[in-house]
Image (cartoon, rainbow, N blue to C red; front, side):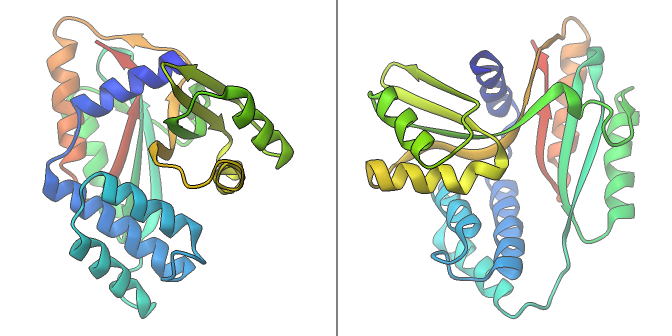
Length: 238
């Protein structure tokens, strides 16, 4: 799993959005989270995690506060998650996660990205079975046994633990995400996470070569330019 995660980190770096897009992405996620689960981070652990990640990505405080304030009333825009799957350049597998207030528009926009780059959008489940949907918590710590013991004592289902150069990376099913964070906080105190998120990690990789490389980059850029797109996952290896 670790190698696949490293590939994912590389792909994240290659397809990182501009600041405006990043702020918009977090703003929308925080708004939806605050609207559905409450505006108090102490009572809404999902919101607290989002705020922590936003701060790490240097999202300004006013962007975060505006999104929370917007979600306070419970009215306003009604965003819903949407997920699209398919095959990208070179036959790589792609998952596109969105938050949308107009599913028909979003599907049309995403499908256009596929068709304009000679790719094929599929039906739900087309490629997602070839990815592990997992929560990832990475932080600086040396005692792997202590981490494992803390998680087991809290009845957390641990998929994998890696210890490399003084950094522990915990992989757990998404349903165990909050339980894992609480168990680690109880055992180790306050933790400054390098990675704290739930994502799709490919079980294998697809080599993309030749003319498919610039086509893949164009495809990913087109997807990331869409306002409704929150995350793009793929198994491509350059």
